[in-house]
Length: 113
Length: 115
Image (tube, rainbow over all chains, first blue to last red; front, side, top):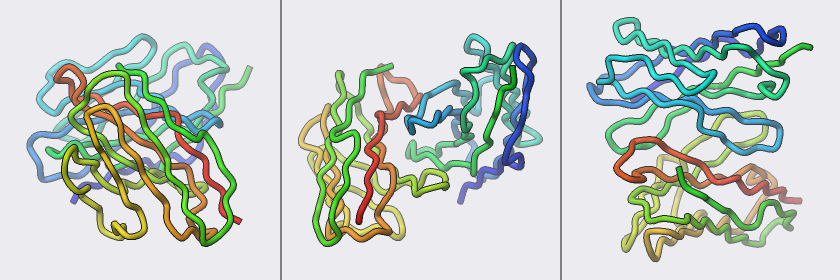
């Protein structure tokens, strides 16, 4: 069984600063995928970034980067140059070979002006 | 990515009734899934919608309560049957396998309130 742990229920960050959201995972599979999603108050789930377990380079998408440390089983999300629109819930998730997503509990990010 | 739509976007329903939620994708996808997000909670997988065969349900979810159809590679429906207030949730469909990618994208969700 897979397990995703997000230990930060909520975080505050100053506008234009960077923030790191922690995510650790547990799996016995060799092949898996790691995801981060953003959920604003509207409820939609917005895909941010994906990292495959065999990818050696850390994934980056614009202001988002995934700090993948396989030996430590961590997949932290870094948001650089935070904007007010980044205020939302952020979920870490992983897939197994069946592409089913297991989610962490989420981290609420509030960006302050 | 793909354009994924869901209908309805939200609904308020009486207990004991059923609601069918539609999920439409603008391109063919191999994998489609249905998730539930109860208030203040994370997302939980309900089932994998298999094209041309019965859906595969996760533990705690049954076909009689959540029947799913997937008639083709771009469309699926989830029915929430004999609803109770505990079914009040956001229901989301997701797709994977676009252009051979492992990335997974979600529809905008259906916000259901059962009174």
